[in-house]
Length: 400
View 1: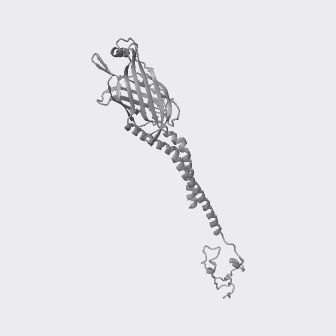
View 2: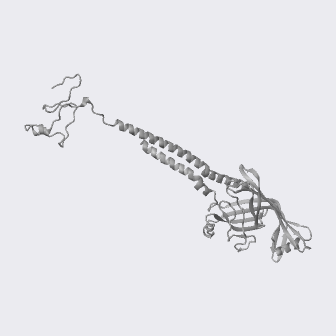
View 3: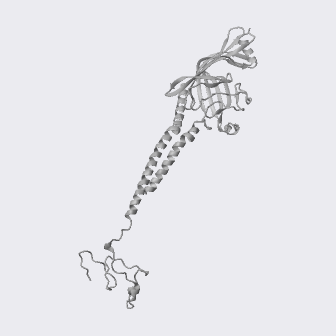
């Protein structure tokens, strides 16, 4: 019984040790990738008392104004597992996922839409950076059909890598249609979670604005000007969970203004967008939950499985050794004791051919060559003198 239990414990110990060794190398990498079936996420940022450009088209007339109000930016990320499976090229299959992203900016007071865009892009599952996918697109005008490939994403767009480092990264800017450096500026605690802070500064970049739009703006704000530019600045600060690479807090201080060749510049946008408290709380909770899953698979489960495996392995070996020792002792105890002089019979054995013909047939039925076993007894007595009687023990008188 000990041998069987010991062997089972030994096998269990080996299995647990193999399991502990395999978790960090085979299972952990699977949970440090963007899943194909990621749940849709929504983040909301608020800009209080923002100034923004409002263009209203009524019939053939165009009304242009720069009102002031609190704005709410809603960004919704919807993963597309079916497109990921069917539309990615061979060199990206297994390494990237396709996301649809929608943003709508509304006034908080009357829910009027100020701006919106939609896009589809591919992201690498580990780094979170944009993948070079030819079918990506960006729709900023609200057109029903958008040309495929009209944008080329690069750098980090909506996420940082799993295992984010304390170094600079490139973050894609949608207004400039290119990625620019974001510097690592330190570590902060956001609602109990340690996060890395990155800052991207964009200063006085000229936006690629259609000439017709420039003329419309000049006609409203600088009638005497003949040319002009829309200049864009933004200080983008992102707080990133370094384990999962997810954004837990975002701030964008955006500024756009029309600079005519003649006259005074006109502010078209001045907004300080910050994640709402509810969005920050939800982002932190999600990051903590994903952190726990990663640490469970990459650290705690291997440790627990390794300790249990060693315990089972040692216990199994001890039981096997004890079982073997007990078996040897049992075999020695079961051995036949040697015959001593006290048990030796001095008389010659009785042979069948030494019997006389006068002996009855019944007397010849027993014996070693017959099919019958004579009854066992501790003290044989026979009337026939040919059968030896048991020798008397020391101090006893032989009785006849």
